[in-house]
Image 1: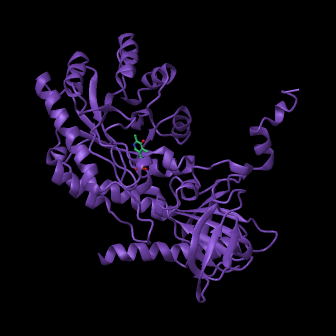
Image 2: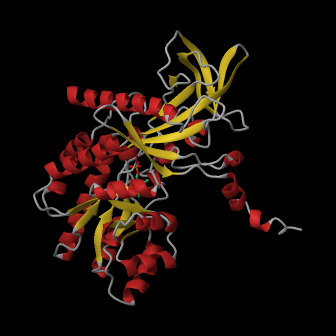
Image 3: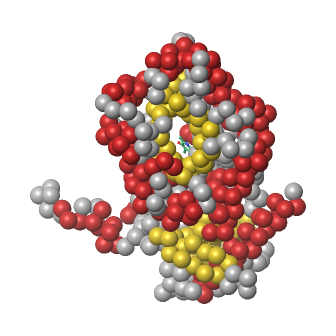
Length: 451
Ligand SMILES: *Cc1c(COP(=O)(O)O)cnc(C)c1O
């Protein structure tokens, strides 16, 4: 336990060093000439999370069991991040042609890439099979398309079917993939579905995998593990009916939730593995190869938004800080603040943690709608123009899932490492979007099109 607290404390210390260095090196700042907004990624933290995931499963699995940890690209679609994770031994889970292009640009081999998406086109399926990328079919109609494609020539790709174990919702409806009416996969408890699935496998000897992704933010570990137990039981049933080990690999998805309340990284991967061992001990016997698809649990804790406070004011006697970080970076927080609360850290214009009597204040973003708030009545040292706010835990699904409201530009992302003398080295992961790019993406080359 002490070691965990220490890891969080180390990460917090690295973060504070990085904030000060980001101001000193001009990446962001309180001064008029400095950038008002930037995003930081803690490279050491990302590597530590990748290593913790890998060792948690390696420690539990029978020696020699094939395992692929495929990072869910949608959590942080940045090529250098995918490359870093590939260097740490991970692959990619992709769910669109864009995500596949990013994985390929990062040099992730086809054999370490998994394609999931509920709406794959024939062209996407054909390309995946040509490349040898693993595919998980979502529904019977997709399986019919695969019948035609596989019939045209033997598939190099491992192919599976996604099931919905219908084990129930977590605390966030929009992220609950295993409800009785979820849009994902084949609903296992619907009348006749189980029998249909077993028959579908017996009829298609090339179906060798089964897939579930039943977790996400707000879903307890026990419920995720229950979905995996259902997956394992179905694989056993299919293999029994086939009289051979037709299903040789189980893809158990991702969905490990993230703690947004403190620097502690919890739940740990090891706790998840323990829950899986309890629910489905056979998963670790070596009978099945494993694929995982973690996203948020690998990246969230390692991202920080740093934004300048441009103005402060009071409204209805409530102090408000107007900052450059809002709905464009924290879309879910702005639209569903109760489900997606974020911490706010206060720094002064030099990047030092700000001290002072806490005052309840709203922390607002730059967008032109009233809900563009990162925090309401938050107790913080009273912010002043030129101060900076930090928004930690934003490495997944926040600044990496930019929302183009008000034509606000995608900010720069910098990775950082901290050396033995506390020196901070930044490397540019993604440049800030330029105004010319915003114009081009808004049809700038077609200005006369509607005349
Ligand atoms: C989003 C998604 C993931 C990753 O989910 P996290 O909650 O970020 O771990 C994995 N698999 C599939 C199929 C997904 O849609």
